[in-house]
Every structure is written in C-alpha cells, then in structure tokens.
Image (cartoon, rainbow, N blue to C red; front, side, top):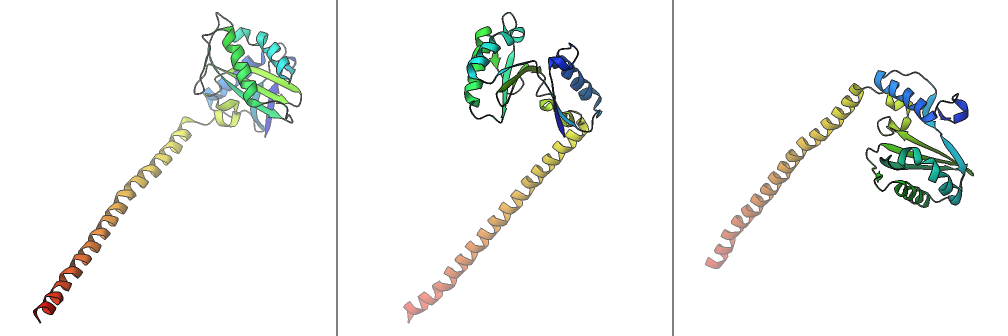
Length: 206
C-alpha cells in the first residue's frame, strides 16, 4: 500500500488540500473504491526547515488563512516524525497551538471533532505542513477506510453489541449458580451441626 503526499507543484496550481478533500468527499459519498494501491492521501501545503525557530516563524504566516481573525475554528494537531530525533512532539504541538491561539483567541482545541486538523509531518530536516478539513470523518484520509459502507459499520457494531449482551446474560446465571452453591454448603454445615447435637447430649446423659 502507498501513501501519497501532494504538493503545490504537483497539482497544476490547484490547492492540494482542496483537491484531496474533493476526492475523499466523493469516495465517502459513493462508497466506491477508485484505487487498489493507494492507502492514504495527504496534502502538503507548505514546507520549512524542521527546527523550532524556523517552524514558528513560518507558521505565523502559514496559519493565517484559517485562523487569523476574523477567521476562527476548532482544531487539533497531528504530529509524525520520520528519521528525526532532535524534535520534541510535545514542544512542537505546544508551540504551534500557541501560535494558533495568538492569531485569534476564539480558536479552540477540539480532539473529538475539530473543524480543522493541522498535520505536521517531519521527514529528516524538512517539516511538511497542511491544514485539512473532515480529518475524523474521512478516517484520517485513509482511502480504504473511507469507502466502508454504513451497513458494514452497522454489522460490526451489532456484532460487538451481541457479544456484550451475551456476556451479560451469562453473568446472572453464573451468580445464581454461585448463590446455590453457597446455600448448599450452608445447608450441609447446618445438617452437620444438627447431627452432632445428639451425640453431645447422649454423652451428657451417660
């Protein structure tokens, strides 16, 4: 399986994030596979050196179309690094989130269903950046996942629910068995005490 990254030079002056979003939107609506070997399509709208100062300087301008007032939106940051050990994931996310907040205080973090996802892909000493929409809806821009039908998802959920219900049905029976076992043990214990009393009384009588 292949993952493809689009840059501005490869799409004939069409903004890569809009092109990829259009393709995924169509696949999500039709549920038709249109590729056999591509696993993921990730647009790249900008690049800079993979050093914190360079990234901060670059993103102050790069983020403006989406996050500078009066523009605003909820967002999350997705970070991945390859062949790079000098960058800190926590530091990058913290600094970039701070820049987004400085462009407009109304920009808020939303990790469940954000309007925008800031994708940070670091490859050696190059930082690739993009701001994409519907990242959660389109299954992290995974082409194989986005074409799955609602029926397939419903069947999977139903299967999980059935397994959960079965486990709940079995549990009371197990508890009932344990209760019966405790009652039987108690009865045996009481019976043993009753049988022991006459022997004690006989001994006292003699």
